[in-house]
Structures are given as structure tokens and as C-alpha cells.
Length: 295
Length: 325
Image (cartoon, rainbow over all chains, first blue to last red; front, side):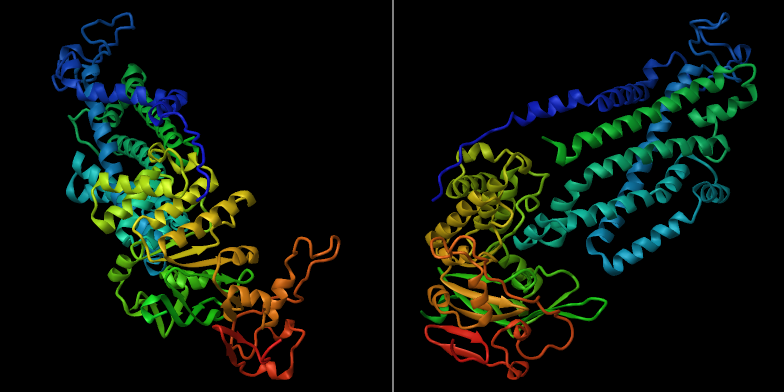
């Protein structure tokens, strides 16, 4: 028997994880902003000063509190129908987050399943998936959304389904190449040699090692879905009034932008901040989760 | 020795790999047997089909490769006729494999304990506590101190030698009867190589398993094997007990290989080491006669014909037109 090797034990994993988290400024900053927006969305009924649907035509386009004529009654002013802008902004966060999360979930499921199947099995399955991806890429999202809305009418759920069923392409492409990479590593052969079935290998050997890529794509896609919803709503094809979507708020305000600039500036900034936070957190998560630099 | 002692029985194993330029005959009719408690070393230079042979036995060939065999039996059960489910039950349970590259053979997403336990729990339907106990036992057996603490560590926290020890422990978790080690020490530095090979030899003797060790290091062979099979161009050109084969090689290729090793005290300093002129022939297309004839100094026109396999006691075989050296 060989001589026992003296152990050189690293720090406790929990502490290591916390240290890494503390040095990950992107994840901390992005996560903090994102958490704040999520809290605002969840607590909208309690945080909002007014009913977001209540119209007060005598107080239309009242300016926010930092303008001369602003009052604390409507801290962010009111819109063209006299609805409290802060309340609408808070409720609008719910729509944006709901769209981002559910589109990332639906398209993530489709894209990951297709991409991993293509990457793992290769051959004919890979050909079929690659064909599906190119077919999907040849269809412009806005055009398909336009046609769908023209047929079934626009609503929040139509937007989620259309975007969810269209935006899986990047998931599929990235998951395919990530799976190909992992599949050729020896621990997959080792698992086969240990008698693991294909399903077990895909689930417990390959999937945990492609999750970092998955998370990055999910954040990018969530951000892009939120922007697309805003664009669709701006065009009148997305969420329908009087729902307070940020894109719809920009759209409704565009006629007033020369006289009441805050009407587009406020939802626009909120949108930009949300996208920024999601991308920052996604980058940070990727750094944090990539197994190679865990040490 | 009775027939029931034969753990691995390979008869006429062939592996063809499809390429755009036609099939490559990577393994061409390899036959050997490994008995319980015995180590067979497969030696040969790069590309001679050693690894393909081991992958073919485990059923891990790449997609483009096709396996053909008249018999490939583990513990009397013919794998070439078994279903996929049955093979998955045997793999990891009765037969296990150790890979060349310890850096990528462990999954970076799990800690050592999880990886050791996973397949054991799957095959044995054992509880987490039982699997943990078994993992600690085996880590101690492969010479890892404070095994209990090691279980929580991730592969990146371990050195190459430690990872290879973990791989060996993982292969032994279910108590396999056949262990295939594909160059288990090649990726490690020299001092660790010796430790790992000694460990493998000790474990093999202690547990009485049948081992197929693939290597291109003849020094390793001399130390731990009982049987040697020398492979060249997809064929076994010579096999037999290690002492006899080293003392009196019958095939010119074996002779050439042995001449390449410097022997301390016997090879004078400054003298060039032996080399074998020429390169391994391409294995595409129809191949006839001895694959070594264009590099062989005993070559005759007869070598281009079918080459007979000679046999001599004790269990020696060689594939050459010459009866003896």
C-alpha cells in the first residue's frame, strides 16, 4: 500500500462561496437593483400611492415633485388621463418581470431540450435541430408577432406565448455547443463505463456543467423579451390599455413628449435600469457559477 | 486453472472506423483471455489499437466506429449479444474502467463524495449513509488520508495524483471483477506514476480482480504484469508470460521495442538507443500479410502472404513466419 498523502484541506466551501460573492461586484450591484425592482413589483399594491387605473381628468399631466408645480400627492406626476404615474410605474414592473421570466422559462425549456439533444446525440438529430434553428432565425419576431396579434388579438398572454415560442433559438445554439463540449470530456465516458443510462448522463453529468451558460442566455433573453414587449406595446401590438406596461406608457406619452418630457423619461429610465440590472446580474452569475474558476 | 477462472474472453475482436476516405481497420482480429487475479498488459506504440480495444470491450467506442467479434464475454456472459440495459448493469458493477486523463475524468460540478456515491447507490440501491461509508473505506484503501474530509472537496481542489486515486476508488466502488486501466499513469509526473502503478498492482493482488492494463511503458509491464500482449497495427503480434517474453522475444517488433529501453548498468552512456526504422502503416483498405514487414530486418517475400500464428509452451503466441529467433 502506498504511503498516505497528508491532506491539504482548502477553506470550508461555504466561506469560500461568500468570499467569491463579495468580490463579485457585478453580481452584487445587478442583484441589488433587480431585487429592488422585484420587491417593488411584488409590493406594488402597498407601495403605490393611488389606484393605477383611477382617472382624474382635472389633474392631467401633473408634473413630478421636483418640478415647480409638482406636489407630493403625485410624486411622479400624472399621465394624460390623470392617473398616478408612480402607481402605474410600480404595477408596470410586474408586467415587465412577468414577461421576462415567463418568456425565458418557456423558450429556455424548448431551446435547452433541443440544443442538448442535438449536442449529445449529434448525427441526424443534430441536423433536424439545426434545420429548425435556421428556420426559426429566418422568421422576424416582430413580423410573426404582428401576424399573430392580427389573427388572435393582442393581450399579455399572447405576447408571452409568441415570444416564448420564438425566442428559443439562442438557447438551442448555445446549449448545443456547450453540450458537445461536455460530451467529449472523459467524465461522460467514465459515467458510461460506470453503467449510467443516457438519460442519467444527460441529466446529472451534462446538465450541471452547462447551467452557467444557460443562466447567461436566460438573463440575456429575459432582457430582450422585456424590450420586445415594450416595442410591441409601443406599436400597439402587445399589452393592451389600460394595463400599465412600461412600453405602453412610453407609447401613450409620445404625443406629449415635447411638453411633458417626464412622461417618456420615467418609464424609459425604468426600462433601461431593469435591463442593465439583469445583464449585470447575468454576467456576475456566470462568473460565480463557472466551475473552472471556483478555486 | 479451470474455465470458470476466465473473467474476460475476447475472440477475434475487430473495430472499423468510418472515415471519408474509407474504413480504417483500427483493431484487426484481436483475441485474448484474462483470468481472475491476473494482469494482462497491452503494449504498443501510439495508434496501434490499444485504446480502441479497451473501449470496444467497455462498449464506449465513438459513434463512427463499428465493433465486430465472435465472442466478447465477461464472466461467461457474451456482451456482443447482451441488451443495452444488461450492459449498463454490468458496467460499473462487474467491469470498471480507469481513464488516462484524471483532469477531465471527474465531473467538476460534484464533490468527490457525491461522485463516488452516485453509481454505487444506483447499482446497489444503497442508502446515502452506506454509500458514504463505502466511499470512505475505498478512499482509505487507495491511500488518501482523512478520507472523510476529502468527500466534501471538488475535483479542482485535488492534485492529478489524488484525482487518479479517486478515479481508482470510484472504479472499485461496486467491487468489479474486471478492471480496465487505459494508461492510468501517463498524464502524471514520474514519481506519482510509480505510486499509482504500485497502488494498482497492490489492489489487484489484494482484491483478486482481473486487470487489463494498457500502456506504452515496457518498464511498467515488467513490474506489474503477468501476461503481455504486444500490439502492432491493430493486431496482437506476440503474447505470453512476461518473463519469457522479455527474456526471449519471438517477434521482430517485440525485439525492436525491447531494444529501445535503456538498461541501467548495461547500456553504456553515450550510445544511441535502439530505434525501429519506418512508421506504422496506414490501416485503410485491404491489408494482407505481416503489417510489420516493411520495417522488419528479417523480411522476406513470404511475409506478404498470410502469416501463421505460432504457439509454444507456456502459452506463448506470435504472428511471424519465423518459428523461433
